[in-house]
Amino acid sequence: LWPWLLASSGLSALVQLVTLPFFPDSPSYLLIQKGNEEACRKAIRKLWGEGDHQAEIDDIMKEKGAMASTKTMRVLEVIKERSLRWQLYIMMTVMTTLQLCGINAIYFYSFEVFHTAKFEEYLIPYVSLGIGLCECLSSILCSTLIDRFGRKVLLWVGYTLMCSVLALLTMTLSLQHRFFWMHYFSVILIFLFVVFYGSGP
Image (cartoon, rainbow, N blue to C red; front, side, top):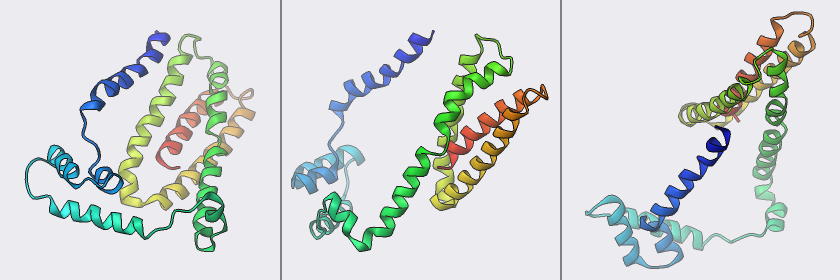
């Protein structure tokens, strides 16, 4: 079953490969990069139907004007630019915490936790698949929450809950040989961590 499950990801790639040639180019790409207004109008009509789309074309022209007045900067120039320093710090902090938040450790050690929790050997891969499904569903949930609460709130709440879950998980793993029910609590915490990761950071 697992080879078929892994191979199924190629199905979406095949669908994209077959259907992509029939999709029109992006109107903004045609107008800004290629400078072809007629092709841009044709692509807009193909995407949105017949009608007056001059307002959309005007928006693209404004974007083109804004891009023309913006200087393209190299990596070193971005690092040296004082006005971009805080944005750079924030981006580096977010990316670093995303890599070091513990999600890789959770995925790596989850099999051992499930095994210790006395799950049947043949059930463990399906429980691991459930973790991936939780992350997928929580990521979909995040796309609806981010418009309502904003990125900053989701980051703060997500990381706070993840830290709390990791602290509890450390405690349950340390006490799992004393209390038999700690194994199951550890499994619940792993699922909660993945949910908080997917819906926050």
